[in-house]
Amino acid sequence: MLILTPTDFSLAAATPTSVLDWARTTHGQQIGEHGSSAISLLPHDDDVVLVLPPRAVSWHSVVLPKVAAGRLRAALDGLLEDRLLADTAELHFALAPEGRPGQAQWVAACHKPWLQGWLQTLEAAGRPVSRITVAAAPLPADDGAAAVHWAHMQAGRGWLCSASRQGVSILPLSAEGSAHPPPDGDDALWFAEPAVAAQAERALDRRLTLVPLPDWLLRCAQGPWNLAQFDLRLGGSARRSQRVRQALRLFASAPEWRPARWGLAALAASLLVGINALAWTERNSLQAKQKAQAQVLQKTFPDVTVVIDAPAQMRRALQQLQQASGTLSPEDLEAALGTLAVAAPEAVPGSIEFSPGDIRLGAWSVPESRLQELVRQLNTQGWQASLDAGSLRIQPKAP
Image (tube, rainbow, N blue to C red; front, side, top):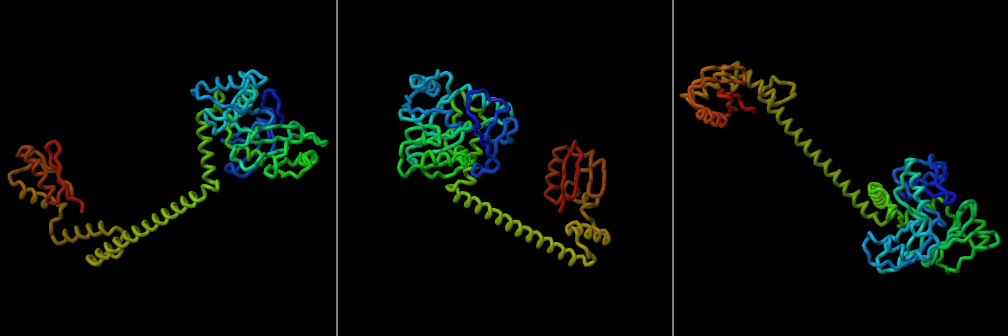
């Protein structure tokens, strides 16, 4: 997964030379490579997440009416037009992940042409975005922290972003202490990028936990927000593949899926052991049968010293023995004619074609119905008989 965020937020149009901070993750859980690159030089990845900077998004709490999905955007325009300085047609809105009609929920708003420019430029560069998320969002009601404060560098200046259940605020940092968020008690979490940590600690007069930007981007990508909504929905295949990859990452690394992973591994191991045990049993059984056939062959025909194919060697040895003693074998013409004379003495063929093990008889003196009955009789007496255009073919059945 490749996570991106603009290094310098402005309303200027994105270009292939625009610079973004990026981080590549392993299964969406650990940071690997990271850096800053122009769009045209970004690493390739099938799963690209765009993180919008805190100052790019405003947050508004609304109670959505129960309307059809197709009228939801128009309802948002009506609810927010008096709260926003910009025309709602120029803004993109996104609803909270778990929002329900009739309940208060957060709506994210950002400049639509600016966001569309980034999406189109990234797609033209071969890095289509599969998900859009935010660098900071209001905390859900069940979050254990009272607030999360993040001191970060944006456009060459230090900023303090504060997220709580009341929304998101952004204040500039200065050494004189111009950033003073409201007190949140002991439950607030304080983080800072290393580049701005010293400045933030002087301004806030407190210690902050260092969190490099790549780690913060990973934290954002693991959050539930996705701003790809309404007319900025990403391609269906991109959304489906992103959901599949996200599900696979969760299954591969999330702690709550650990019992399922162990169970699946145990099932695969037991199946592998079972298949190998069955194959070993079948192999031993086959080898025992082959050994028994070889013993019967060598016991019956002591002259055979090397056994390669016991059934075939036994047939050949038996044929040789029959020929030496003058005994007819099923492949002899006399054996087939003798059986035919017993089965249908009135049936006399007018033509005979013979090769060892294959006899064709034609020009019969009996009707075809009698020949069909004769075929059934021969097939029950150890022969393989068939009728084709009045010609009767007789072969000894394979042992």
